[in-house]
Length: 96
Image 1 (spheres, rainbow, N blue to C red):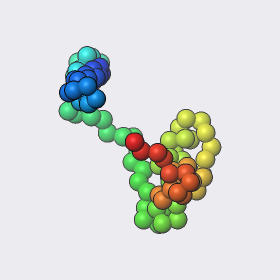
Image 2 (tube, rainbow, N blue to C red):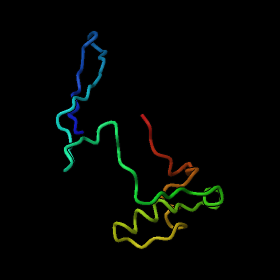
Image 3 (cartoon, rainbow, N blue to C red):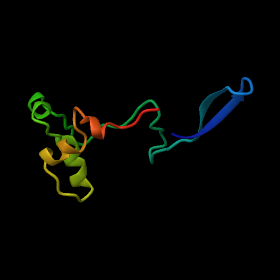
């Protein structure tokens, strides 16, 4: 499916607004057999999940495999350093 998001803003008073959005389906992918993938999904060719040991040791074999499929050589250890389990305070993303 493909959707279009519509953002709406409602003025509540001179200084306050409420924002909301909705997503409306605008397209559906129909496969060669004539069926849609909606509510069906696909089965991956290969399932890769990190083990408890991977998580403890900071390895990310899933990201490493995804990078490999995109033509990037990366070890699970290198991949694990990209999105650390616990972010250092100085690298913590800002959340508004």
